[in-house]
Length: 204
Length: 225
Length: 186
Image (cartoon, rainbow over the protein chains, first blue to last red):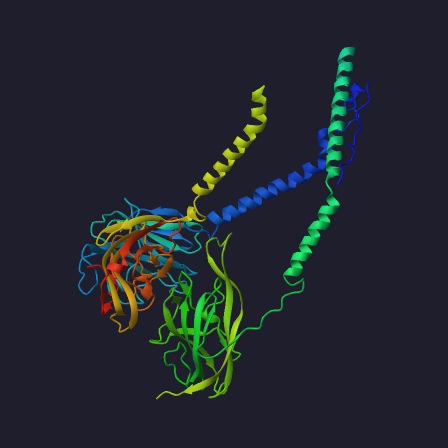
């Protein structure tokens, strides 16, 4: 391997003028910055809004569109009902179950049952099992039925089935520690609700 | 003004000649290295080493060894001993219930297996473990077998390290697919273990499943008493 | 001057040595791959309640047995370690099932069996403990060391886990131990 000769020979004496004055003198005939960059500007004018739209739509779809994960609660006042995805839910009734005879419940725990009337509307509605959240601490509970020895009963549904078109009531029993005090939120999760769910305030 | 230009030109000239001097020196030094000799020498060493190791021809793949019944085979970090192949009319302790009306039968391979890896393994294998017990094949049947414990018929899912268990591998077969006394060939799997390093970082993977050993044995018809 | 010679000959070597020592120190100090995903450990002892983020566990009993049975009639021989425990969720029931139950003995890891009425995969309730038993089938040569029991929810990565040290050599072997039924802790 050999090192090639330098590409540019050493400048001869006397041409010190060449440094620094590379541009030809500005004249009225040179095209403006806008004209010189017109291709880039046109492409940017197309791509910039397209990118904003694409990224923005994707995020909007994830947060607010019908299939979004429900994270925004719609808080419903006590004894009030609310409508979502064409179905009406509420008003919610709740009570502490005092008579635990025949039920498998440990000491130090109590049972709260909530009833949610559902009017599914013309197209029916689908929802998963409601959950109970304690307002002061944020602790969450899920439905308990077979664990406390209550047998399955088709008249006491735990979730909304889209096939049901008449009015029905969701029955939701929860096992919570005895010292857990209300008020609570009963969360109902209809499907395809656009990132929201219903939050009913209850205090049994 | 004139002196500035003159001294500037002189400085530029001095720089250029210094650069030329360094480049010249570098070129002469590099020319001293006998690159031709080095390349020839390295090539000669490479060929000599290759010849010492047997030449450039591809190593022929060794055929999978043939096992005898009861012989222990180690592959995919599992020690497997095939005890026998049975043809049953009833479920027994296998995981398949043959439909009596259509004359279905169950082909059952009994194996003793010990997991020699240091973590629990999936018995039936899966996406990350392609050489486990569930990859054993018999008599040309292509489906995955259903695995159960020989002692109680419970579903076998996990193999604990160094704990020997007896498993039943069951396939659903038709009435006339196999008969008592038929000779069948079993293939036992082998695979290589690797710990994943990017998306599956830390996951144990057994890849490249291939036939590790074969065994020929006869089918034994077992009738319910 | 002497300092010129020193600077050109000694300083580069000193610098090289310093960099090598620094590199060795960095290699020694660096945590192993995957340390960023390690779970947060809460240590527990027998009969003491230990809590991790969404898991509260009390190990009530530890047995070694030559055979295990359960109320449903299943039984199996072998060298078994049986752990009786109570467990509850703390924050939410979503994702709160006892899916991680492993025992590390030396360089081997064992997982709780899925056979019988096992507490593995049990769905836990917030604030109300459930009880049951976990059984580990161990090889005969694992009983001379101590083991570490690790309990956690479905995905222990970056979550809390509860660990308890068990001296396997100290446990006397019982002839048969029965797995508790899964139910509320009484």
